[in-house]
Image (cartoon, rainbow, N blue to C red):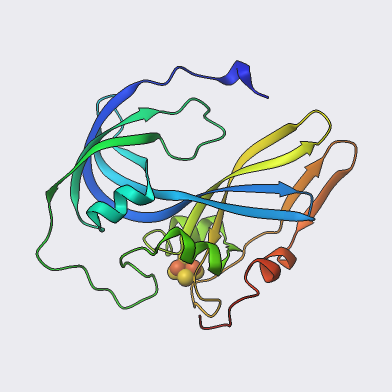
Length: 217
Ligand code: SF4
C-alpha cells in the first residue's frame, strides 16, 4: 500500500496535437510464474498545453471515447481530465478525460508505409488476443513511438502475497508482428519477491503471451 504517496487529484483542461495513440495497459507480475496484461483503453501522447502547465503530456482515453470519435494521429483536440493520484502507478499524466472535442483534422490521413503502424488503433479485444512481448525502452521512445502496437504499461509486481504488498514501475511492450524489423527486446527484466531475491523475465513469458500468432501476424 502507498497511502502516503497519494496526491489530491484535480481537474484540468488541455488542448493539442495527437502525436501518437497507444494502448493503455496494466500488467500484473508474480516472479516469472505469471505476467497478465489488462487492456484499459488508450494513451494519447499530446503536444500542446494543459491548464496546469505541461506542454508534452499523455492523456488516458477510454475505448468508448475512441470508438465514438475515431481520433487519429495529427488531430487537434481538446478536453478535460484529472491529474493522477499515484505517480508510480499511472504512466499517463492525466486520466478520466471528458468533454473531448475535435478542433481540426488534416484532410488527408498520414500514410506511412509500416513499420511503424500509424493507423487506426484496434479494439482492446484485438490487443488482448495478440498478447505482448518485452520491447526495448529505447525503441519505444524512438522508432516505435507512433506505432499502434507500442505500449508503456503500468506494472504491478506482487512482492508479498500475504500482506498484499506490490511494487510499481513502467515497462515497454510490443503487440506487433514478431517479424517487425524494428523489434528489439532489450535487457531481460528482473522481478523480485520478498525473501526470494530476483528472477529474470528473459523472453520466456513473451513466447507464452504471444503463442496464438505466427511470425508475420
Ligand atoms: S517493434 Fe513493435 S512497436 Fe515497434 S514498430 Fe515494430 S510492431 Fe511497432
